[in-house]
Length: 91
Image (tube, rainbow, N blue to C red; front, side, top):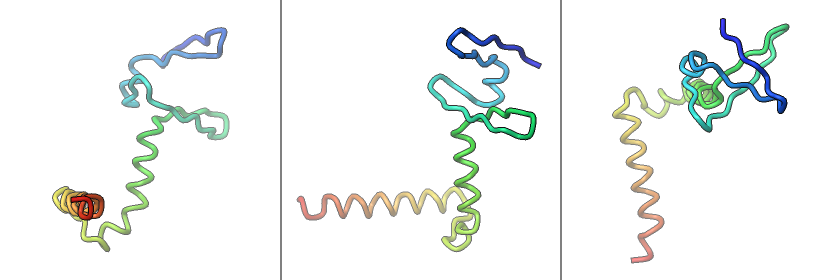
């Protein structure tokens, strides 16, 4: 259990062990979620990443994304497409 004090401005310093567990660093944003009588603190970036992963779960098979190499290839193809569209007619 960790203890923190609230400042006169309502600010709380998150104890270092909690920051490490949540992988929080300076400038990160946190979420406060209500669960009955509890308030849950979460790293908003990790929550967003998990949500994206969950939404992409069904699409990975459809798009043939089974490995990191598959994802890298898609990113490379997208970058190539953007480059060609942006600079093809400007040369």
